[in-house]
Length: 50
Image 1 (tube, rainbow, N blue to C red):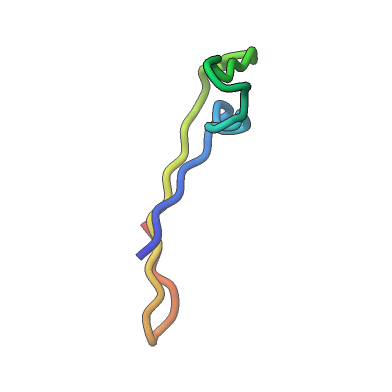
Image 2: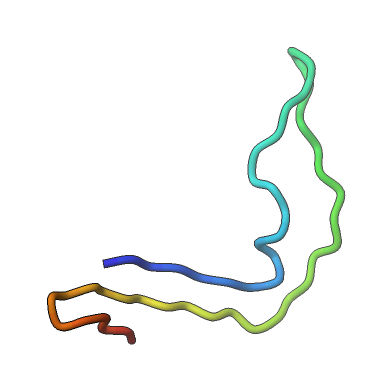
């Protein structure tokens, strides 16, 4: 079973690098929009998706 989701906010990186003792900051546009989720399973008969 595999779960995936997609929306406009997922383009930004979730991790970053910075010098020791400082925070890794990210400035980006925050967009609220539609969110899509998908759950799929692969069986011997083929894919099952919901």
